[in-house]
Image (cartoon, rainbow, N blue to C red; front, top):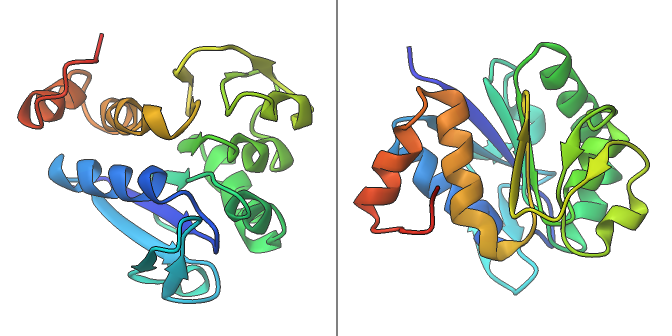
Length: 184
């Protein structure tokens, strides 16, 4: 059975942090649903309009992972949504994967996901996160939580999600297919 991931797009999201995981996870055979917060057309932080598969309230709940791209005000919009926070918390409490990049680890923090976890985030954002232990790495995986530092880590972040959802090494196969050499 194919793994399923939900990525939430809120107005002002960082485009590279959303499109990269959708693209690479789909290449790996993971069924990705891009859900817009309130709309199926969502405008990113740099004015790019992305068509979501459906709205978040129309998305079911049977996902193996939830992914939050960062960006401002995208992260602020994610944090302001009770629906987003409750969905992130529910995914985490069910032992499934929670992933966030750039400023979006603040969403995980608000949902209580970062407690006793190591994480990374956009430089300076760690000052706004109340729990967990910050590290300066580009990508951090701590159990069922994956965080990444910034847009420049979007490929490595996506590959780590692939490895977490599929067998270890699956991300390496995708990296080789796209000729991405910056993988451990």
